[in-house]
Length: 202
Image: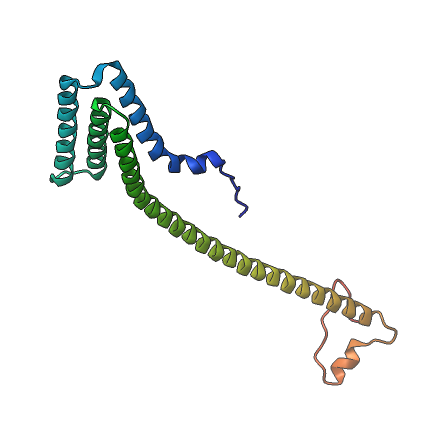
C-alpha cells in the first residue's frame, strides 16, 4: 500500500487566499481606468451600471427563493451585482477616497464569505483524510492477520513434512538393523509392522 506523496507547490497553496484581493483590486483598477476615459460624472454610465447591478441582484433573489433555486447561481448573481455596483461608484467618483473605502469594504466582505467556505472545505478534507486513514489501518491489520495465517500454515506444513521424513528415516534405519525380526514383535503381542518403501518383512 505504497501511495505516491505529491508535494503541492507553494503557489497552489496561496492562490485561493489571494484570489479575493486580486478580484477586488482588478475591479478597482478597471473602474479607475474607466473613470479616466470619460466615466466621471457621466449620468448615462451611472444609470447603466445601476440598472445592471439591480438586474443582477434581482436574478440572485429569484435564484435563491425560487422552487428550483440554485445556491451557486444565486451567489454568482449577488457577487456580480456587488461588483457592478462597486465598478459604477468607483468609475463615477471624483477622487480615490470613496473607491478605496469601497475596495476595503468589498475585500473584507469577500474574505468573510470565502472564509466560511474554506472552513467547510477544510472540515470535509480532514474528515476524508481521517476516513482514508481508518481504511488504511483496517486494511493493514487484515493484511497482517492474513500474513500470520499464511506463515502459520507454511510452518505447519514444514513441520509435518519434517516429521514424515524423520519417521520414514527411522523406519528404514530400524529395518536395516542386524537381528531385526518383525515376526518376533508380532509374537510378543505387538501389532504387525507393514512394509515401507518396498522393504518386505523377513
